[in-house]
Image (cartoon, rainbow, N blue to C red):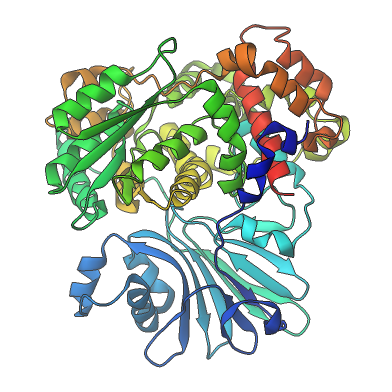
Length: 575
């Protein structure tokens, strides 16, 4: 069953990417584009440009600086300077070195009119995105992957497909399209055009998460105090000025601590938003309501049904750059839809697990300690991939033979990070911040808040928080069976004991139940169609077994099927 039969045909024309800016490096016919700025071989389409005072540097991009006030004060500039003007001023003074002064979220294109070079920049942790593709003798760059669709083929990158099936997102610089790359977080790419081609001159990092353990002689209490001071500073910077703020509140430690800090410092209404999936499904409303009451927020609860999830999936997939196979994409979007009534800025608790050692790290840590001789480099990668509990063990059967042969010997991009001499927990944290954070979590936050005309901000993913997390001794992040010990210590005085002491359970979307009881027929029509987009790459006989729940009852068929449904619909939406 193709997409048109899956959803309301009348609404399909409205499922289009929100128009966004892009730039072209190379000589093109400007009359073919909605050009807002151009010179000989640099063109800006559908975007305002900012120039430095002598017009040497042209700035285009999406920028929000959390440390704007401090920068204005240091540079003795007036408050009328916008964030883009501030970056233009700093770039004139310090060139690329200015990037280490910027805290916040940004993806930038900086054109040097004198040297005829273009710099692509993505913020340190990856809150914003930037994609680029060669188009003839030119290069097209955009903050949204869908904007580039007219400029490249729709041939899939098979390694990216493999990685998506293993992790539920596309990892690293690849995208699902073979001809398009994503700029990695904390990187600067320098390029220039020539009559024959685009020359990529330099690709370097201005910041990356790195282990830097300090103050090992200090106690957990001491490290908790240091973290709390920084949390206080960062959350205050992330709050909007003179207006309400919204917060996605699950009732877990991470979103609860952001809620408590926002309620402490914000002098305008604080709205919190929680979800549940019906009275017959487990939920965390007891804990989210406890936090909302404790912090005196305006609390909103949204019920999401199985039909809501299925019917909204095409719309949500249309808003995502690359496919994301996490069922929480739908709740994230629907919460934003109701939050728009009360706030323009939405905070969240994303980042707590990657930065402070969430419970998903524990099985791998135990295996590393007690796994013995089987802890080879190959097994380190396999253990990490198995921790996602997606389709890694199924690849030989799930991928068609020719596809599996093409990808089976190609290393995973994060493998080298597992083989370093860093503490093992810090290795896992580095990978989770650099890849899962930048390529899944933060991209999802950005895509789905923009879809609701909101600005999403993730304080726990602030570069300064990440940097401090990499300095804290590992035993204060995962202390025995207690995860995120230092974060709990930091917010001990502002949260109820029940929140501090409860084990993390995670927001469980009941996809297994819904596939068995509601979605099975629909999923069969979608995934088993001989003309399905995935049919050229995946073994539909195995998918049929999953849809019939044949074999091992513990195979997490629901999660895997959601992964495949998301992929199929994303591919159809791109057509």
